[in-house]
Amino acid sequence: MSVKIRLSRGGAKKRPFYSIVVADGRNPRDGRFIEKIGTYNPMLKKDDANRLILKTERATHWLKLGAQPTDRVALFFANAGLVKAPVRRDTPKKSAPKAKAQERAKANEAAAAAAATAAAAPAPAAAEGEAPQA
Image (cartoon, rainbow, N blue to C red; front, side, top):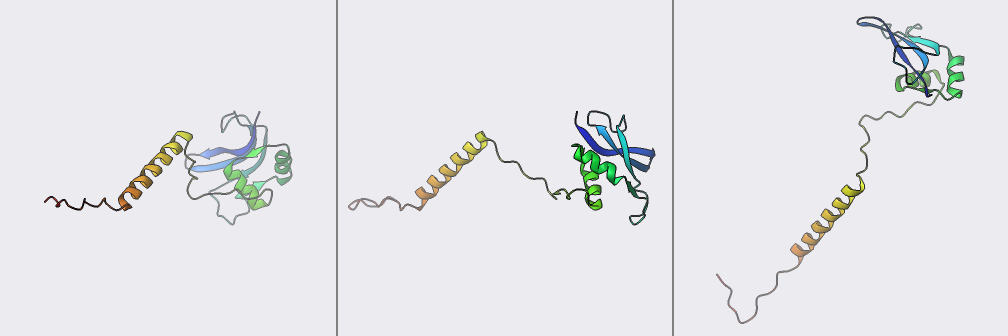
């Protein structure tokens, strides 16, 4: 059972309200949860004290037990000083090519190098006694 700390959506249409819950990762987003450890209301101003309410002692308890926070909840925890901020990339990291593609790339590089050396080598000189053909 992988335990996640995630947001569970509530509120009306176009008026979101989230509960920060500890839940089994296999359960639906708004389904059964183990414990509610806070709330998040994105409709409030950023400097409002009620925008994010978090029970820090319960959050640290679940983190010590091995619960994994989702990306957004990890940012909330980092702002509260519970965990280090996760690394966020602007662009996704490109994966390394597989073995077959690496072999193909090496073959292409070898062929290109051979073509470059052939082009750089001087053309064979015409035999001395023969006139060049026009």
